[in-house]
Amino acid sequence: MEILNTLINYDKQLLLFLHSKGSLTWDTFWLFITNPPHWIPLFFVIYFLGYKALGVKKASIIMVITALNAATALIIVNIIKNAVQRIRPINDVSINNTIRVLIEQNDFSFVSGHSTVSFTVAFISFWVLKKHYKFMFIIFLFPLLFAYSRIYLAAHFPIDIVFGMFLGYIIALVFYKIIQKFVFQK
Image (tube, rainbow, N blue to C red; front, side, top):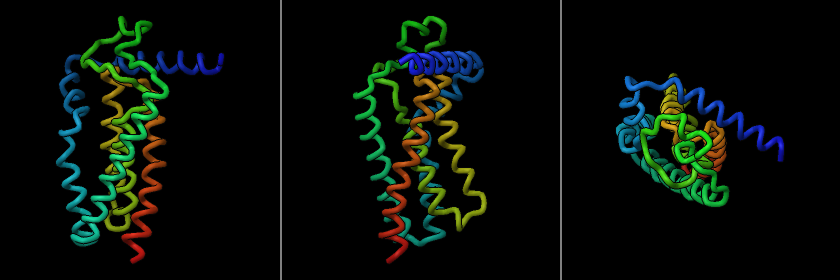
């Protein structure tokens, strides 16, 4: 239990350090980045790249599987959040008087849904399209910015983000296996 308490304390200290780097100049940018609807054009770009590389039928099937992947990720995240019930940094009375509160959220923190869903979509997109586009690794800018916005806004602790990345990877791996079996091996 002592190790867990030490880890939680380091997590809080890292959040405070990273969050302290924020300024009024950047607040609007990170508030924009953290809003999921602002990323919708990226999904159209990903679909278009899939369409150009694989054709409309395969791209459409992959899009549906990716949407199911994201929905599954959200369900798993909510199950974990409700089981763990870690409060968000902005609601943590031990630190919230030392952070700038830019958003209000009252649900739980662990694990980050933004991180999980964005990484699961990025991993699937990368794996499907990396053979067709040399610079497909750029797709990982999306989840990195999206996830960091949650730390900047003190909506998540760094561990919430890191576990979200790993969870997103695992979920994407399962759904990528489905894509390989039902789309690429027909």
